[in-house]
Length: 154
Image 1: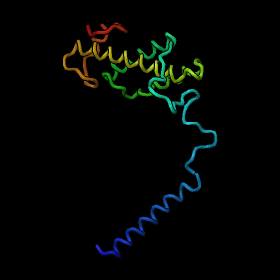
Image 2 (image 1 turned 45 degrees about the horizontal axis):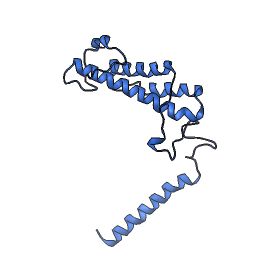
Image 3 (image 1 turned 180 degrees about the vertical axis):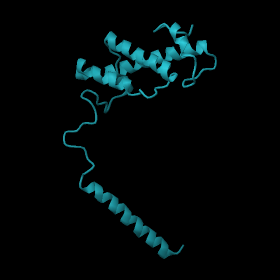
Image 4 (image 1 turned 45 degrees about the vertical axis):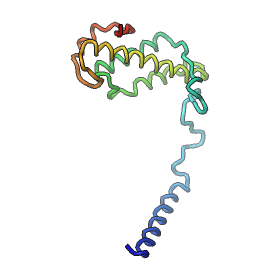
């Protein structure tokens, strides 16, 4: 490759990059005025892990998180599967019942409830099916014996 070939490549690259930047110059790819990337009360900018609190949530929402974890175990063998947005939608639907300042804490609390139940379910299935790992199919009829909220590690 000669110096002239390299120069042509560099010039071509510069033209290509410049043309790519022009499409952003007219701001056609920016969100409309007033657009927010998060729900009210969900901005975590500047928060540390220690800033999050576990707060009381309704019994109905607590049960809903546990039911979602159970359904994920039964239908997708412990994976999130096709209904992976179900939990997010349930939490979002709960926001109007929560003061804006507590929404991020409620979302975190509900996520913790879901994870704890998912871990209990994993332990339960492992206690019945040796060598089982999430995503690996098993006879889901064993879930009929599952008692919600009871740890299997003892």
